[in-house]
Image 1 (tube, helix red, strand yellow):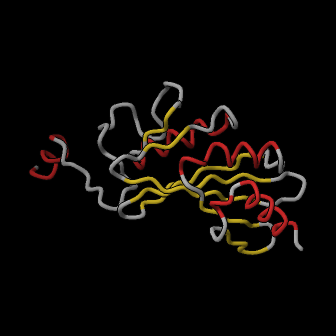
Image 2 (image 1 turned 180 degrees about the vertical axis):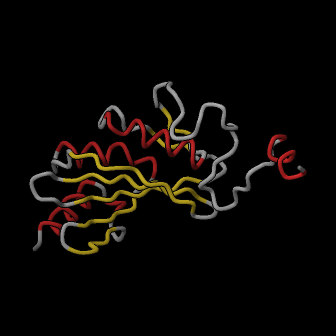
Length: 160
């Protein structure tokens, strides 16, 4: 049994709801979809028990009716990357912060808020990122249905 398969089996034993939700894409790449309400427990276990201690990045996905959020963490001694996906409805896109587990998640979580409009519950107050502070709050440019609203300045420039 490969290291990836052993990790998968250990996670399924601990989190039975993930059975059938894994994909070992290739050596050192494990993908799993977990229920959003299980995310914190799942990441905590992966970090503490399986030594996925390297935070890599968070990726947002516009999936139509849902927002997908992928958390990429790695084992430094094996190079195995665990890609943990949750989906939340666009009507209430709330995800928990993982900054208490991985402080480096702060900026990627701000990106998810700014670019996709998700609310990261528990994220400490701070500056927006990567959009400027004066960017309209309800404009999220990585949503597939996003259309920029014309500003007075751009309308004047177009009308010459």
